[in-house]
Length: 286
Ligand SMILES: Nc1nc2c(c(=O)[nH]1)N[C@@H](CN(C=O)c1ccc(C(=O)N[C@@H](CCC(=O)O)C(=O)O)cc1)CN2
Image (cartoon, rainbow, N blue to C red):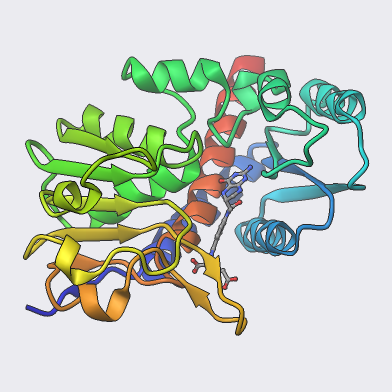
């Protein structure tokens, strides 16, 4: 079997075209969706992700502003910036790029973002709503994964979804999202015993651990759908996923590549969440 490749970049193009139209429509009614991104420090990967976000916003007609703060920024200073954005009526979405430097507590910052502007979907309010299957801002990467799976007409109900990784950004909400779609979900992590025996039982395998090429074909069931969230920069400057693409594509039915797989969908779901925030906030204001 050779897997069908799910190009997130292609699916993203279609969704972004629709978002652009909706943004235009909203603007014709006097509301220009606005996203503010805060980045602290000089992490090169974070800087390039923020650039992707800015460029995507521009193309979709979304107003985007980036606040760049130095590495030594204190938690109080960052809280002050978030507070200002919470109060700014032209800002519909607020995103603090992660990771943050050690002197800042990520959880405190995330909780300071107004839940109605939390387009990353990381605030406990939105996480709680996702967990109780209510409308919420859902974290962009899991939301993008679900959109790719649905767009590829892959059935989810009753399927065994194995999530490798338990981060708050990807692993945990991805499992929750697929549970809400009536999958049977197993989480695996660094303390999981006999990991590859469990990955081999997955109908849909989502890997988000940050270890280049750790999943080989021997750890994947014939016909499984394999979603690779990894973005690992190797010493030669190349980019690798968490899945050994060349080997796993021989046994999987569907596989996402890196790059051009999950990454572009993450950015697209950020645009979608920003549009949703702008619609909700403007309709409340009347
Ligand atoms: N506040 C947030 N911080 C972080 C998030 C997030 O969703 N919100 N996610 C990740 C990083 N991330 C977005 O911020 C992200 C990572 C990768 C990509 C992407 O498009 N990758 C490309 C390849 C990149 C390259 O060529 O260098 C791809 O996979 O095709 C987008 C967004 C951590 N922080």
